[in-house]
Length: 455
Image (cartoon, rainbow, N blue to C red; front, side, top):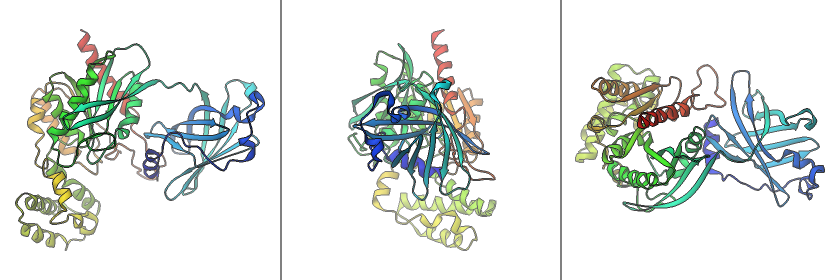
């Protein structure tokens, strides 16, 4: 359920004025006597059910006598999810947040201000679930713990629209350049991670992928080196900033191929963090989602070999334009009980030209020679339950490289999906957040490099 909420939250702006408030909310402020004033500000705490808990930050604002509110879920990467309706009746505040097939309703009451630190207490109802979550939120300062600056950087394909996120303080700070996953990713895809690292004292720069939002160029038709060169242009600008001590690259998924490549093409890179990044080619990685689905439908080892053959034949069709082997192997696969679950039917042939233009430039990219050439430390974050890449295969390859003397640290997180969101085992996950140490581990890795540089 909450994956829908994450998608919706990213689509909304941070501030969203809410129409249709009751007349009592719209009345002019009466300074300390106006009950609305007591709800305004930032409130932080937890939401709890019988089996789960997640951190919550709630911002309640008033502009021209109209209330607005947004919620952020720190453990899940959800920022500024705006309420669609706010009602204040007496001392009870009701907030409604939209989702695609359920509604989230928070009902909160204000504690007695005379007892000390004020707090909001109440319930969180998901209309698609039976259990109410319990909330307790305490008033916090509204000043952010980070500073954000927008800028434009000249890249190989034109302007790259970027944003620097700095922790509070004098610096200088270690820095991270966030690279992109596949598809048309804006800088907003990495904003939450940049803010989370700022809490750990790490600076970041995020940018729109070429051809996306405020950036020039076209990501379709670009190969991995093109995208790595974009990241390097951003990294050079970032490192020239007075408050940046050194910088490295972070890449999730497809970015796990691009980050090590960028670090081999730019001598001043200090590290690479790869999150769910494969150590095999895109053509090999493309087999895994079909295998993953088929295994869940009962496919065995012989079936897996057939699936690999089908996908290999499809790639051969892309390269050579010869589709008969693919069609033959696909017809055999169609007779198997697991076929419908596998998703193989979605491999179109011939694929549409737009997909060809995007995929052909890098489908046979081999990351191992680049990893062999890498001279800086690599932190690889993986999950054995990844539905998109074979993390166990990647772990074996990285471990072999480590035995050859490469500085590679591997952290495996069982029970998480490709996006590092928790997977439910015996019950539905209401708040599928990141691993508890997902960001702190990255910060520790970067600070270890800082310590080494200071010796």
